[in-house]
Length: 490
Image 1 (tube, rainbow, N blue to C red):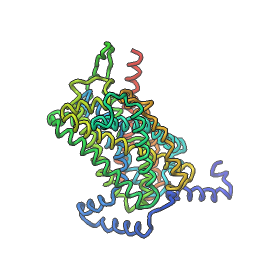
Image 2 (image 1 turned 45 degrees about the horizontal axis):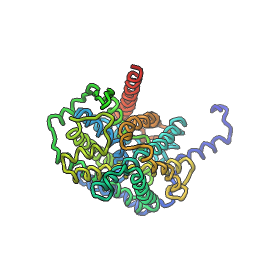
Image 3 (image 1 turned 90 degrees about the vertical axis):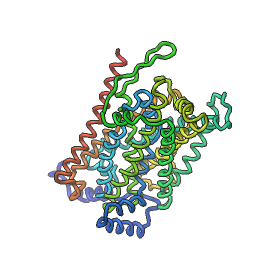
Image 4 (image 1 turned 120 degrees about the vertical axis):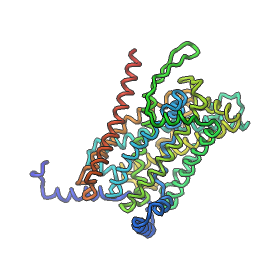
C-alpha cells in the first residue's frame, strides 16, 4: 500500500511498530534504576575532567569490550595465528591490527547507534535497513555460534588431556579419545555454570564480565611467558607490523611425497574473519543494553572497545604468532601440524613441563571463554526473535542450543582441527558483510538516528571508513575464494 492509499488505521499500526522498535532490552532482572541514574550522572560530570581522570573512571566500568576480546580470542584466532606464524614467521603480524581496526570502526558505529537510540538493533535493522539484513545477521550469528562450538570443545579437551599427561594423571600411551570426551563434558559443566550466571541480576552480569576479563589477561600472560622464553627478532617484528607484506605461498612435502600448498591470503582472510565474527557483532550491542547503558555512555563505550578489545586482542594474537614463528617456522609441517604438536615443540624450548602447561593454559582459556560466549549469543538471538526476557528460563534453554558441540572431540580431532579451523572461520566470516552493510545503511538513516546522525567532515570520514572496511573484507574474501578455485582446478 502506498502513502496515498493508506487508511486511517495505518497511523496507529505505525505507532505500535515504532513503540516496539523503541522498546528496550527485555530482561528478567534489569539493572537497578537508581544505580544506573547515578552512573549516568557521574559520566556527565566526567565530560568536564581531564583525559586521565576519565580513563580511570572508564576502566572501573569497562565490561562489554572485554566480552568481545574473550569471544574473538578463541580457537579460530589461536589456530589462525599459530598457523600464520609457523608458515610465514613474523611476516603476517600486520593482519591482527588491520583486522581489529576494521572491527573497531564497525563496532564503534554499532555502539553509537545503539546507545544514541536505545533501540534493540535487530528490530532497528529490520525496520530501517531491511528485513534481509536483520534476518541474515541473526541467522549468521546463530549458525556461527553453533558451528564454532564443536572445535572449541575439541581444542579445550585435547589441551586438558595433554596437560593431564604432563602431570602424570593420564597414561601418555592412551589414544585419548574416551578421555578427551570425558574432559569435554567437564568443560560443558563449567560453561553451563558460567553462562547461566548472566542475566540473573545486574551483579551477576558484572561478575560474568569480570571473569571473562581475567581470562583475557590470563591468555596474554601465558603467551607472554612463551615469547619471553623464546625471544623476539625485533627487526623481523618491525617488518611484520609495518611492511604489509603478502608472502609467496609456502609448499611442503608430506612423508608420502604429497605436495601441499599453504596460501597466505587464506591465513589473512582467516585472521580477518576470526578477529570480528558475526556472532560478536550480534552479542556486542545487546551486552550494552543488558548493562542499561545509554547515550551518556557513548564516549566510555569507545574507550571500552580500545582498551578492552583492541589492545588485548592485538597483544594476544601477536604473542601467539611470535611464539609460533620462534618454535615452528623452521620445521613447518603444513596441514599435519596440530595444537598438541605445537605445544610439544614449544616445550623443547621452554621446558618439557612448563612449556606445555603454560601454552596449554593459554589455549584452554581461549576455548573456555569462547564457549560460554557462544551460548550467551544464542540466548540473545532467541530472546530477540521470540520476545523472551534475558535471564528467563526460556532464554537459558536457548543458551543450550550449541551444547551438541560437546561432541566436538568425536568430529574434530586435533589433527583435523588445524586444517579445518581456518576454512570454517572464513565460511562463518562470509556472512559478516550482511551485518556490516546493514549497519552502514543505518549510519545514514535520519529516520533512525534523528539529530544524532553523524554530520560534517567527521561524519563523512566515519561513514567512508565503514564502507572501506566492508569492501576490504569482501575483497579479501573474494580473493581467497578465487585462490581456492584456481587451486582446485589446477
